[in-house]
Length: 172
Image 1 (cartoon, rainbow, N blue to C red):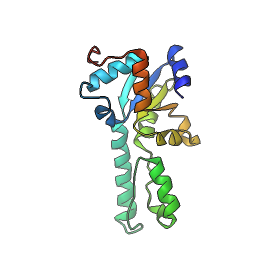
Image 2: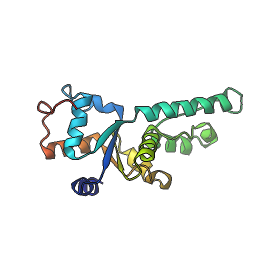
Image 3: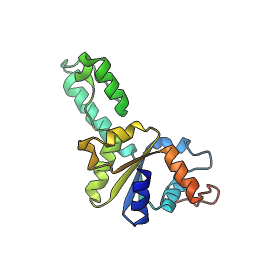
Image 4: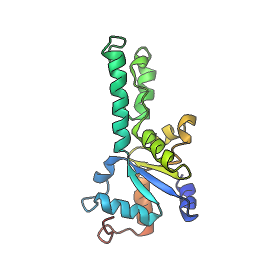
């Protein structure tokens, strides 16, 4: 995906980075939200969004699901995680509890969907700590929202290749 994304960035496509909030602790003490945004723009991203808003929307959805199903006694509990690997493992190892796993969209997907509603011609790159999000984004129901997934490690490599020096990056 790095190669495909590099071509899209070079071609001037409108590409928006949708970033997991954990970025703030991944790139060192000198990195602020403003510097991180500027560094991504140096790579060629048009804009940067954090997926925290998508997490809020997902939490609201899960609260409604809880109120409808658990609080009324239809389900004994509700399990949730934004990790696709966790969800797959839970369904495989505990199939009898599969109905208790939240079906709410993850923050990555909800944020991408919201961005695409406002800017349907853009491409979305989710940037996060885990390669399992690549699996989630490859699902047919997700592909129309999330075009690429990069790990923090991959983005760090892109920063290195572009010569990004955090001391010289201005606040964005």
